[in-house]
Image: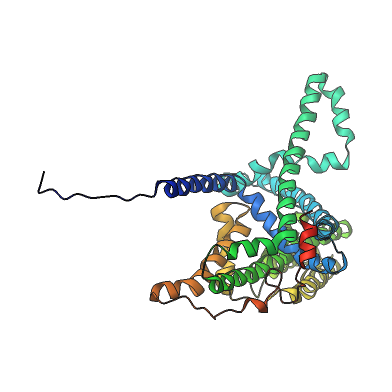
Amino acid sequence: MAGMVQFELDIDWPRTMWITFGLVLGLALLYVVHRFVGTFVFGLFIYYATRRLYRRVRRRVGQPSVAAGISLVGLALPALLLLGYTLVVALQQLNRFVEEFDGLGNDSQIGELLDMADPYLDLPSVLDNPATIIDNVGGMGTVTSTLESVLGYLGVVGTGLLHLFVMFALAFYLLRDGSRFAEWGSHLTADRSVFEEFVAEVDESFDKVFYGNILNALITGVIGAIVFSLLNQIAPTAFDIPYPALTGLLAGGASLIPIVGMKLVYVPMTGYLALLAGTSGEGWWFVVVFAAVSFVVVDVIPDLIVRPYVSGGKLHTGALMFAYILGPLVFGWYGIFLGPIILVLVSHFARIILPELATNEPIRADSFDPTDLSDDGDPQATPDTEGDEAASSA
């Protein structure tokens, strides 16, 4: 018809097909990350926790792959195994605590945590006495039941080792090829100065969050669990510290809270022991020992050793505290890592990118000098040479 308006669509079909294919691949990648999000964010934590050690080893070892392997196997793996064992012992004590107070078992967060950890709760007893599996043969009376028990333990260990492998593989490649990933990402946009500024600020904040705060909390938690368990060995009768490993980990988690920190845990515990001493008329020496050891060994020493290495950042302390608290409530156990990650990305996007997008002005071309940084944004790092990069690809 002569009066009708005709619309012509000039579609670049090859480009559209490639964009569609890229979106499908991106969604597939997001699905994989979603399924293993806890593993990936913990791998990112391992990377930042060992990156400073890697750079020191890298200056003495010519091969970056060897330096990354030494950093991970020599420090991160033993520390992670110790942390895992401490967590399992603490979960056992949490399980006993919930059984003593039946009402707490109805709490959805605690119930989900115990359900998820249930297969691992028997591992410490097995590690302390591996013969228990063999001893069960006579008790069960059948070979089939024994094999099912053995396969159950193997399944738990196998699943844990699989996640551990993914964590360490991710950290390994980020350590070895971090500068290459940054260089590749800088070519994704023409506004390289702003992109590099954003990445550098995010990297600095991640270093503060993972290496500084969370690593300090985990170290403090392990120290607290060990110290409180040892104090329990010398405690007078009826003065046992309730759930010492769990109390120690709670002290480490409380260190993420500004100002008061772990005092929220060991000060009330000191008051509880003092109440016992006041009612019984004895045991005051243990109250003094507990308070002194808690203050010096659990509180002051980790603060003096770890805190000086916490890099500066532009994150609001209160916002970071809420990220630590709300992250696990929203996402689960890995929320303590994922919550701060989201906060870092959102805050720096709002501070660096959003103002220029809102004003519709040209992106700053000279706002950031990438030559001020080297090797993933660390001014102290030694940049890799071309020969080193060639060796790392071998």
